[in-house]
Amino acid sequence: MQLDEFVTANEPTEDGETFELENSKLLDIDLDGSVTAKAGSMIAYTGEISFTGSASAEGGLTGFLKDAATGEGAPVMEAEGDGHLYLADREKRVQIVDLDEGEELSVNGNDVLAFESAVTYEIRTIDSIAGFSAGGLTNVYLEGPGTVAITTHGDPLVLTPPVRTDPQATVAWSGTASPGNHVERNLSNVVGQSSEETYQLDFTGEEGFVVVQPFEETPSQQR
Image (tube, rainbow, N blue to C red; front, side, top):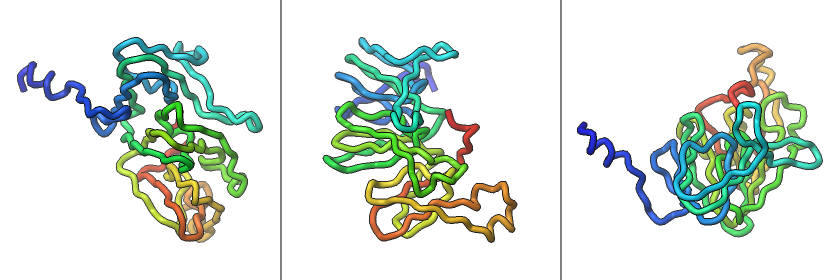
């Protein structure tokens, strides 16, 4: 490929949307105002954009979506200004979801990439699975209207209840779905007590959906 062909093939494209994909792993936000984004996800920007948050030990900016009651949170930064903001997270695939008024999506805090300022958020402890050691004790509940970008390792699978899922492979679920917990003791006999597959999220009923990924993300792989 000639140099000019390489440049042309990989230049940003514009489709008029605020959130658009430059490729499956790179989000372009046409910013005119402010958005909340995962701390450390900015790879480039054009125009006049400022970032706010707290200084981290690594020299970057971090803030927190924080639940005052629990102190749990997800590291984020606020980006404000006019320009194009490019975000990515460890080569994970980016999924763009538009929420209507009142629609709610519960997302693992590690999988929230960005959301518009019109979207409201709340950190909630999931009491029904409070005894789990696996991920998902607290989730970010996002409510529309507005656009949300989440990330997945590989292509996601969307399932409808009733279904049981591995907590480490569970990315998100709709506001109409609510998990309980299930312990599969037969699995512990097969794969050993240390396996998190022994503990599962149990989505009952027939409403809503659950998003899973073909990857089990352990706490050491989250940041």
